[in-house]
Each structure stands twice: as C-alpha cells, then as structure tokens.
Image (cartoon, rainbow, N blue to C red; front, side, top):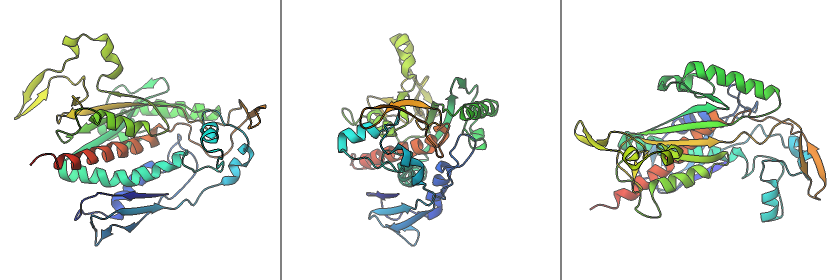
Amino acid sequence: MGAIIDGCPSGFLLSVEDIQSELDRRKPGKGPASTSRTEEDQVKILSGVFEGKTLGTPISLIVENKDQQSKDYKALKNIYRPGHADLSWDLKYGIVDYRGGGRASGRETVSRVMAGAIAKKYLLAKAKTRIIGHAVQIGQIKASTFKESEIEKNAVRCANAASAKKMEAYILQVKEEGDSVGGIAEFIIKNPPVALGEPVFDKLQADLGKALLSIATVKGIEFGSGFTVPSLKGSENNDEFVVKGSKISTKTDHAGGIYGGISIGTDIIIRLACKPASSISKEQKTVNKSGKKTSLKIEGRHDACILPRLIPVAESMIAITLMDHYLRQKATKY
C-alpha cells in the first residue's frame, strides 16, 4: 500500500516514527474487536524527505502487505457477499479481484493514515490543533462520561473505563455468535485554525463530510447537535456569542464550531455512525454470478467491530482536510 502527498511545505521536520506511531494505532490484531491478522505495517519513506526535513516535493510512502492469505477468498470467487462491493464492482468494471486487500477493502485505509500522520503533526506544530477521537457507542452500549486519558487505555478507544469493559464484553459475545457490531465515534477538534472553509461549495463541513464519508464503514455523519436540532427552536439552537478571556467564543456549540461553512476557532464536533463489519462467519443467503440462490459462511480473519480502527483513519481524514484548508487560507489574505 502506498501514499503520495503533494503540497507539503518544505523544511518541516518529519521522521519515520512520526508516521509509524499513527499506523500502530490503526494496525490489525489489537484487542478482542480486531482481526487476528498481524500486519507489521512498517512504513518506508521513499522520497520527499532529506536529513529529517520535508523538501517541498511529493512525499512517497509505502507499507508492505506481508500477512495476506488470498486462499481464504477462493470459495467466494463467484458469489456476491452481502454488504460487500462485489456486485457493484462487477456492474461498474465487469471484473472483480476476489482475493481481498483491494480498493474496496479496509486495507486501503493504511494509506490515509500515512498521509494523515503528516497533517496531524503539521497542524499541531503550526496551530496547536489536536483531533480527539473516541467511541461513544457500540451496539446499544453508550459511554456515560468522557475522560480523555482513558481513550488509549482500552481496546475500544472509549473515554469511560467502565463503559469500555461492557463494550469489549459485548463485542466478544457477538464474535462468538459469528457476527459483528457497529457503533458511533465522536471527534473533537481542539484549537482548529480560524477562517477555514469557503462560503459556498467548499464549506468546511462539506469537505469534511466528503472526506469522512469516503471511508467505507461510515454510514452517517453529524456536526454539533446534528440530528437533534430539528426538535429545537431557533432561539434554542442559535449559539450566543460571548467573550472568553480575550477571544470571542460561543456560549453553546450546536453548530459544531462551523458557521457559514467557516471555522471560528471553537471546538469542531463531529460524530460518525459506523456500520457493522460486512465479513461475518454466520451463514447468510445470497446469489452467485449466475443469479442462482446460494448461502455462504465467510472464513478468514475479520474484525467483529471495526470502530476502534476507524478512529485513527477518520482522524487522518479530518487532519488532511484541515491542512488543505489551512494552506489554502494562508494564500487568501495579503
């Protein structure tokens, strides 16, 4: 898997470790929710960096696939798997690579994290921007409180230790049944640069939405109070402006930190609905390429809950989008 990042400013300190630390958060084989696949995901920088600094030229990165097992997919060669892209790809291209690990596979997200690691470091260095992702719901189990320090201490990346244990136990139960489960992840962008986003088609939430919905497992997105705002009145939904310290801020955050498509520097809040993983070992009914009814049980190594691994991927897509807009904004004012 590879990534080419174009447009990164020169002279920026960048090491393999900066990228590897993010890849380690995403890689498989961690915790009860994850697949037993154990890819090392060791990144190599092929170009664009010299003596620990970016050159301003395209940065080329690569990660080798070492633990692939294409034999696990052979029995599925002529069968359309429920929840997968087999049929849609067949309709579009007339040919499907059934061996796993392709463009419709979650494996492609490793490239997003490679690029996102650079954007995250740049935003932190230039604007002190941090992106905090955490699981707020898995199945019907919801996190009751938020404590940032708990997020990376448990396998599901939940900010509440007690809720995390319940989530993990539920995932194991579902896994024993040969099934999978989805959930909701929340992302809090602290200290986002001000004035990011364009007034009409390239609104910040529009570009963030496109970036996040390009992740296959994401099926829903909301900013701020999201789907609760239809039940509010305008007087309740409007965020009153106040002065906090020396800065103009808002009393509430129903808008999620974006107004008129442009950031104002307050926290940007995003929540994503993540579908259950489509690859399950439970027997399912489907049809083959001839249209004949059949059933299947998917073998191999798959995630019972993809949400914990979605979090670093979504953080990366957020960081890439913010950095694009940050560099764009720098060229806006004299």
